[in-house]
Amino acid sequence: MSIPKETCRNCEQPLQEGYSFCPNCGQKTNEELTLGVLFYNTISNYFSFDARFFKSFIPLMFRPGYLAKEFIKGKRLMYLHPAQMYLFIAVIFFFVFNFYVRDSRAEIDKGMQSIIEKRENKDYSFFDKDSARIAADSVKIQKLINPLKANKETLGLSDEEIKALDSLAIINVDDKKNLGTSFTFKEQELDSLIAIGAPNETLYKSMGMDDDAGYFTRKLYAQALKFYKTMGLGQIYQTFIDSIPLAMFFLLPIFAFLLKIFFYNKGRYAHHLVFSFYYFSFLFTVFSIVFAVNRWVLDIPDVIDWLIALSTFFYLFFAINKFYEQHWILSFIKSSVVSFLFLLFVLPFSFVILGFIAFLFY
Image (spheres, rainbow, N blue to C red):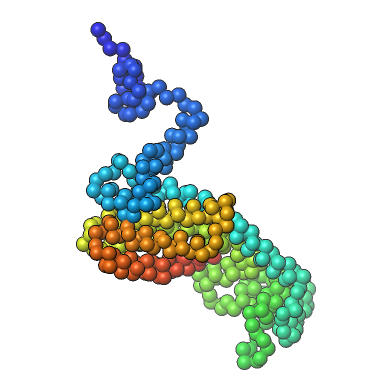
């Protein structure tokens, strides 16, 4: 008597009728594509949002170092993979954090717009008289030069002579003359040149750029001028925030490298990386909850916010003590040194680089 067969719709291999899953590829045999199935498959495939996540969540939060230790032992199917957990929780964190970013950028843009409006209204009450007079003279000189430039062929003026006339509009103030040559003075001078439509090269020179400046220097001045015209601090801030998720892919391995240095004989670098994935997953989970509660539930007092942030260090201490199996005094010292190096050197240096890149490419 022949056993009824059917064909798997995924791998097209024959299987016995009545099987719920294909023995060859593992796909469900009778699953109809509904909206719920489509959503679940998307989450499950890309973020492993299944039973392993819930089985991993409680140990992640309340058993420091346990998941990393179990993963190193070889239990790699019982709990969620460290990289998958990190990616999933990081997406949630930056989703929640983005609401704070939008509010902050709105405040920044509002402040920058008020500065632009003051400049447009020629509100220079905070400038000294000498600098205001010099800037006004610059405008007058340029107004005299413009008709000459427009009729240079009729008047027989060469390009060199025109350049020489332009240079008259560039204000050169001797630092030895006490004329209040502060940044605010240059700001008003720059406004005057922008108002009369001076070319960028003239603006760059007014800002202090040398004639033989290289590409990188010119790029800096171009971005500085762009920032001055648009007061685009909000754009720089947004670019900076958008680059943080990418930066974390470099910061996390650096954190693992610090662990490798202090626990050199405690396994391969990959072991320290597993520990780092789970620890950063814990950090993102804690701060996601804190940000979400502060925004949508109640405003947590700042003291409690700081205590929660401080608790993440003690979590690191207990996790290191559990994972590396060292005496608690030695674990505390190494946890403190690793945290100190990462928070006071690696993180600030990385943020300075990110801020500089954000300024160059916003």
